[in-house]
Length: 235
Length: 123
Image (cartoon, rainbow over all chains, first blue to last red):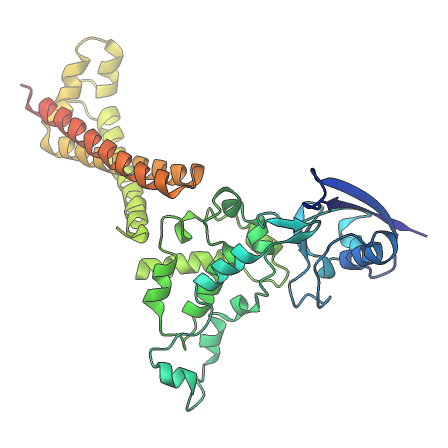
């Protein structure tokens, strides 16, 4: 039977002084994903392995990890796509908790800082709307791709600016900011633009484009950042 | 000043450097204030300062040099600020850097303006 070699990052801060890589041989099955392999390891070979996952179908965004050097969703990555020898590590730019589990507190703090919700000047109407807010196809087209974001943190992990400048909001937060800015129902344009118009804000993006490269949902945060810069220049 | 305004000035000063740097290079390589081009006279090692001074004596060219000084100072120091922000991600360092660079820019402008004015007035 064909086997896949998993070399998995292991580190438990409560007992280990240094990180190590444990190697496991997992029997291959057609359609096997990286998450399937890790769950096989956890169930049959080493139950101490810590991983985070939930939906197993690329919707929840919980199982982000670095597979053979690239941030990927483990449930969305077929083993045969990446090869028969896999090096699995936690996501970069997120603090490590244990083994493949990372801490998303800072990521969600930045996510929340861009106010990822619709803001209306008529707050009473917003809380108890009297009618629907209809949008044309063209209005929807402006932001629809950015609303597909599942907050998996892969773009944040791939961003070279976040690794050198931890204060940088990151591609996910900036793309989400643009998503709400471009929404015709939102009424807080100037407040939103001010949020990231800082010394360590949107202007520090180097446009490496790695965020767009790794997004499992086809969102293009690099495009959102460029569009957001244009909106800023327009005022 | 908001970061977007600083960056807008950064882009505009970049365009300014292209325009006024182009005028400067054109002046040095193609104008002939004393028979030879300024560049040719600098190769002679004799009397080249007179050809260069001719450039400064011309009010329009002297002004263009001042604008080149202004744009390169702003663009260069702001570029340095951006690099330092990324090298030292620390608020205190960032704040100190801003004042040091502001002072440096002011000093460069004063010294450069003084040089252009003196060269313009030499007869």
